Image 1: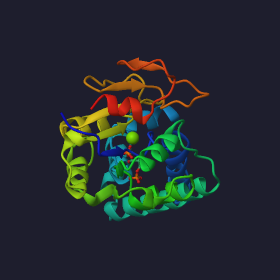
Image 2: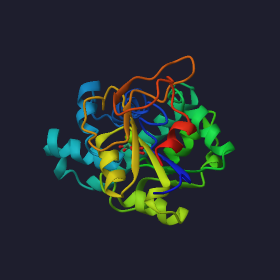
Image 3: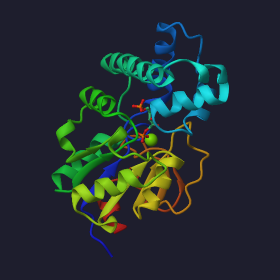
Length: 249
Ligand code: XBP
Ligand code: MG
């Protein structure tokens, strides 16, 4: 049995609810700016989240919904440009302070830091988007020893590569780490890397499949904001803390 040495966090949907009111809005603003008449509704975006990575998501949308665009000259460049524009709009949304941390995230990270537990990030998002988020919330980028993001590995989640990358950089085995994820694809990635995982669902992911997760909860909870357990067992404390996490190792 391992000893807990590091917590590894997914970003979008886990640290903060960035998708529906962040990335989605920014994608639509980018389409509008270049005069492309696409509008990704909340429901449609939920389906598009099956594809990780902003550039990959645009390409998938074109293949599925706008196949005429496939013959666009320099399609790759168009996608890269749209993604960069989207990222600029996403940063503007973050700078307005509209996307807070999810309940319990700051408390748990603080507790882990004080206890000498190492911290890392493993995300599909592009690095500038991760840094833009961290700049606008009460967590510092240097709180995390490793920030593994975006194209740093060729195969994005649900492939386990990003987690293997983080384990390698930390120099730790999977049995010494705990992951926090919010989505089925993220969970597949951490599970395939042999990592224990706690899931904090959101509206887009609450009905997804998380077999073998340590715990599926609606959020990490706070002393004055109780969490709800969807699957698994934890003491009736109302919030998740290091004491509970250490008890599962
Ligand atoms: C979530 C994603 C990302 C974001 C957009 O990643 O799928 O693709 O929607 O990211 P995770 P970029 O949950 O692993 O953080 O536009 O920056 O690619
Ligand atoms: Mg996520």
